Image (cartoon, rainbow, N blue to C red; front, side, top):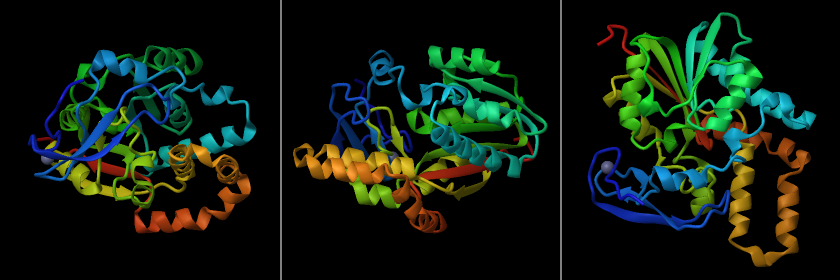
Amino acid sequence: MDNVNCPHCGDSERIVRYRGWDRLHHVPGEFTLVECVCCRFLYLSPRPNDEELEQYYPDDYLSFRPPLTEERSPIRRFDRMIGLRRRCDVVAKKVPSGSLLDIGCGTGDFLAVLETYRGWKVRGLEPHETAATIAREKYKLEVDQCRIDQASYPPDSFDAVTLWDVLEHVDNPRCALKRIREFLRPDGLVVIGVPNRDSFDASLFGPAWAGLDLPRHFSVFSFAHLSECLRVAGFDRVTMSNLNGGYHSFALSVRFWLDRHPSRGWSTALVLGMVNSPAIRLASLPYFLVLKWLRRGSTMIVTARRPTNGT
Ligand SMILES: [Zn+2]
């Protein structure tokens, strides 16, 4: 485990906010989320080093799940397709066509759907070998198997770069964004989807909020921190929104919250059954629309541009 200073401002003074464990895969270990005294950034320290981290990304980790084409349940397939189309629309509304790099592309679902939009040439970057191989073999995608800090592309290579649920896993977000800026053409777009520290779910569930996902998430961003990070990395025109939905994250947070009270037996099973019921999900739609309107959804979508003067 490595102790690190604040990735946002570099200060070493911090206070402990949460102690927790791997609630998703139950790999042993206890972890600490700390808040920087200087800038209030929330980050994991100490954190697993590269070798230790591998065990926290098993082959059944969410991003490495089988591609959409192999999803057996028609409802889940439809559900995943809606989510992927929403992501594609975020990009296509701001950049109608061009070349795109998806960092942390997993098994390639997002790129495969975007390829069906007119005029898009896509490429992926994925450090996990199995996921990268699936993306190449199932979708015939061009995928580079490496991390963002190992990536090497000529300057001005892409019109857009996307990071869906990725930046919170990165060791040094500011360095990563500076590299991305080099790959982007002037006026190019970066799209970042990350858990929203200022979300209602984060307040409601506290340590059980799925957005914390210890120890895989190294950083927990508020919009204020992420927009400052983007500006320091040389981006401008920063915007923030929430996608429709957020039910999966909510349901996972409920499960994590119930895991803290395992002795409740039948009532736990009842609540989990209700949360997983399509009727409850349908009835909850207005709640998530209000959260989106208030910009308090569990995941925020932040976009920014490389300045047009190219400096
Ligand atoms: Zn700080």
